[in-house]
Length: 150
Image (cartoon, rainbow, N blue to C red; front, side):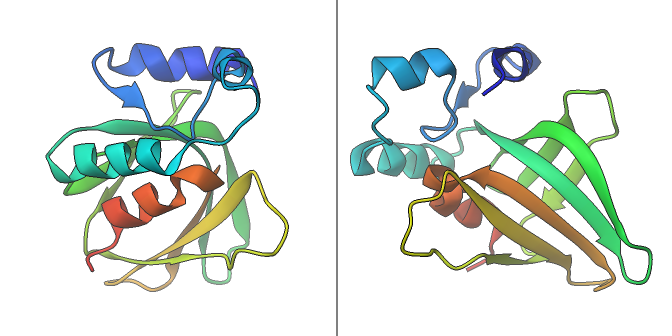
């Protein structure tokens, strides 16, 4: 994990904390490589539902039908209860994801523990607009709660 990227995320808005699955290398060492507990993940969900904000690391790829896939560098997803924003650490334009405007799917969880999960987003008004994000697996439920309308 690149500490520079996490440092950039922290400077974006100082009062917004990282989600429990988005960890710096120091966090990993402090927790002895254990994943976040169910209580930590539930605290993140409770914070989001009460109107709080969280940051999740996310790599984004975007595509339009018949144009191929366009990879965008590392960034983060700033989660809010009604609208989330993907921000690049390389000063690319932000992408806003309003809750209910996107069909949200995740990759099925295999038997092996994976550190990242792919979340697929398809625009409800223009199905040719499609984004995929790679997020830390422990933050999957949080991201689905923030982006899904159910």
